[in-house]
Structure formats: C-alpha cells, structure tokens
Length: 118
Image (tube, rainbow, N blue to C red; front, side):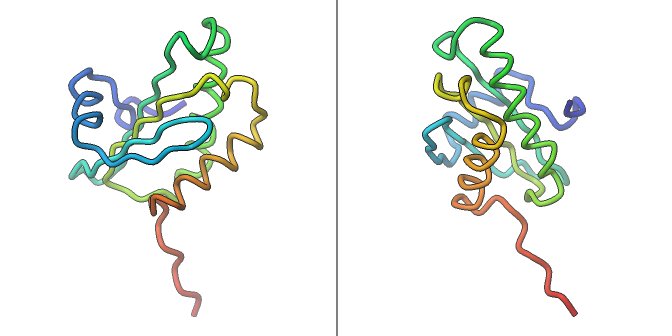
C-alpha cells in the first residue's frame, strides 16, 4: 500500500493530469503524467465500471499498485502519474501486468537513468 502522501486523492489533481498531462497508451491502461515540483512522485488509479464488478476493479488496481510499489526506487521523482485501467487488465497475471507497466514507463522515460558503475 502506498502511503497517503504518495497518492493522488483530490479530483482537481486528476483533472489537471487529464487536461495538461503527457500520455502513453498500453493495451492494458492509459498512463498520464506531469511534473509536480515535489521531491517525491504521486500515483493515482482509475478503474471504471467497464473494468468489471468491484472485485475485478479492485484486483486490477491492486496489481498495478503492487508493480509501482516494487519498482519505486527506479522511478523518477517529482512526477504525478495516473493509470486509467482497461477492462483487459483484470484477467491478466501479475507478470503480464508488470511487464506492461515497465515497458510503458521505459517508453515514457519515467525510470531514473542507470548510475555509472565505477
């Protein structure tokens, strides 16, 4: 579970990302992001009723949230990110979701650059 300060919770934050944010498309979700001028990143998740019933929506959200939690250290700081989940995500395994999230984050350049090894 992400701590509250790392979550987007207010409607105006989601609207700002929708209006001004950069976007990247995946087969499983839309990704929108924007710099937030904070020393940490914040994440939000949207799963509409198109994703399925409450159990399916919660499972889809938990899968993506867990991928974010596990790759926390690699992600750039100072951005707001919103995942708009697709109905196809609910039936995928954790490994498939993880692969897709990493692929989209790499394509959007949202991972920190690797540090040079001495």
